Image 1 (cartoon, rainbow, N blue to C red):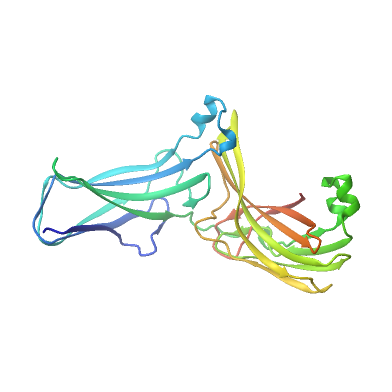
Image 2 (image 1 turned 30 degrees about the vertical axis):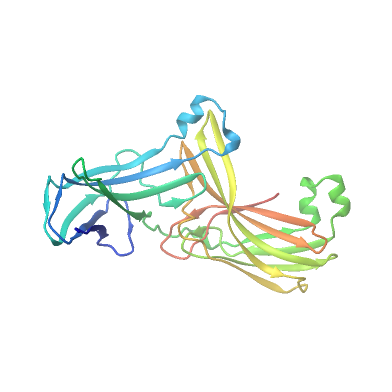
Length: 314
């Protein structure tokens, strides 16, 4: 019985590329016997897939048109005309430029409603009795790191108290809200996707015992255009800063490592947006919860650099 296997191998082991790079590699075949084929094709594709959340179903046609898949890269290469693969190992080398004709090459990103994917697909065509065989190799595209801005090391102080939350609280909540003051800072005003988010938090005083303090990273994905859009916020990850009651005046560190494929530099385009936020959540023993929201801009920099943040009570 003839066994026939093949795989796509990229020359760059980490599979990370920049726009205008040359994609080098080979398709390696292993056949136990001579194998006939009807041609070998290699396809290069970069695409943005946009998906509407269920709450937006039923909006008008202009909206649906705005969330069609966006092609960033499209190229194909014939590795071999119809013929035969010899027994043993065979290799077909390729070079493909990562050059976009219209849209820039956005960074690889795996979200809930937005996905930016890049891949190579190799198809071996067989005769009408044999099923064509396909293998896929994904790779990552990143922006080239940029220099640091002068404001990148500016810390962002914050304060959480009943007074800062009163404007968003109901009358009932104002009466039941315990008295407390929580202060802290985020170490940098800009955030690099390869560096952790750091800072500190201090419980200055509180009438009610604290159950936990958490920091939540949220993606905010917007699909659509000016005529209509779908905007959804979903959790990426949550870290626990404190478990149980916290001693007053004790400085607690904030240290959050960003997941590689689920974050990317903040991206704003005419058809979609990828933005990020931080939520500081404090839960008291009576299960009363308060939170503070930080809008955060991620970048890709050559050095330690988190992102421009603004605070707003939620």
